[in-house]
Length: 272
Image (cartoon, rainbow, N blue to C red):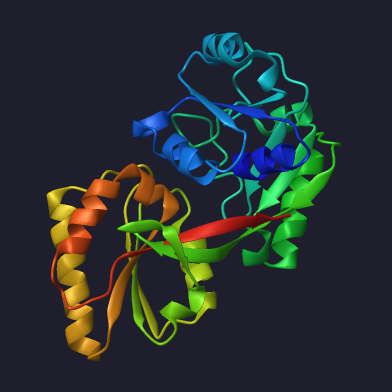
């Protein structure tokens, strides 16, 4: 969503400043830098986002026309003009408990502070499920506009050639081992299924996980097993977030001789 907004502002001639905390090694901030390198967007990283914003404004001044606070609903020390809340349709409320008993940071009544609600991965759930989510939103007092969004893969690139985009059909008819350490791996798997590979296997790690030597061995062993079982070409497919977290590790993994093609990375576009 941050990428989507930054590009939208860039297209109308407004230079955005993205303020992000840089959580868990900064994989998301690195991904944003790479994805937005062809725009006027500036990216400020740090837990004290007011201080980061002040520093960036001193440096760039009038070059910055708008600030986008990444993951900032609870960052109440900064005054905002618009609060946009994204709801994951696949798991909208978790177990409905607040941290530490559950994933929620605030009660659902906090949705009343939102100016826009975006139900994400709306294409991956049924209409009755969407209606249930909407009912919960309205039952908790939210009256703002609600939109629906989905992620669709736009292309892939190889870890050793990140600037060279490849069409999605290069995955047709081969075995794909989806490896990810993201918050919603099911959405990743679903999007790959729609591309049309011969077969999909998956290895899921916890969100923001950094791949260890043990993980790399597991990936290697799993891929070798798939090649042996199916007597067909196989590739490891990772997400952009995984690539930007551990590009050197993935390049080293790619350099191993498994009689496979280069490790591709799936890049996505947000549709609303």
